[in-house]
Length: 290
Image (cartoon, rainbow, N blue to C red; front, side):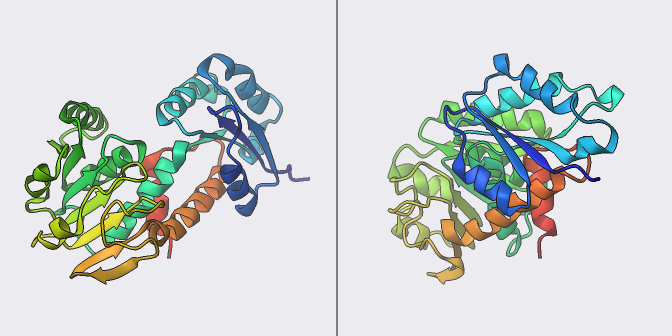
């Protein structure tokens, strides 16, 4: 008799995400065990509960999902989870990281850009680039071979993120730029073919006048789901819409793909007991979607 599929949800927030649990159900997971307030210090018994209760091929029917609103905390939990697996004896389960939806959202956004641009030649500007989604978008674009300007109000923070990305993508073409005021925007936009806004809700990162004035710009993607738009003039539901000669995507226009990617990634966890799905692996799944 085939064992039921179990997804163990390790959330770094006090209350486990309802969103992530609903997606798990819609992806076909039979049982979701949700734990909140997970830290590296308390993760070991949860991992051992996964790997010592089933054996052989049945371990592929158990997987771990690391989530929560804090990506840095999620990365720390994922690293600790890996320490307590025993793959040399086959005692392992598949793992997925998607804190704050950063990996699935970034994968969907970059996939959208790739429908219209050759990413290996793309010159991109990522606004809100030091945030969780912005960092992942920049990392994927750098890996594709393009040139990425990573914008932040604090250039020092942007430079630190560029260095962190280069640790994952040696030779990645990244440039930190300041976007502390509207006077910084023309230089940051100069020569860019793609702009992705991944900043916090409530802030207009790219006014319409500046977007219209950028002659090189071809694609604009705004990932802010709460009005006002991060890229002024881009509507929430835009999905390849023409706005002033630019191909535009809004948060809902990207969101449908994000949900498909999330469900596909959950399904992938149960194909083996040794997968680790971080942003590159999630993006690879996004590229396989119709």
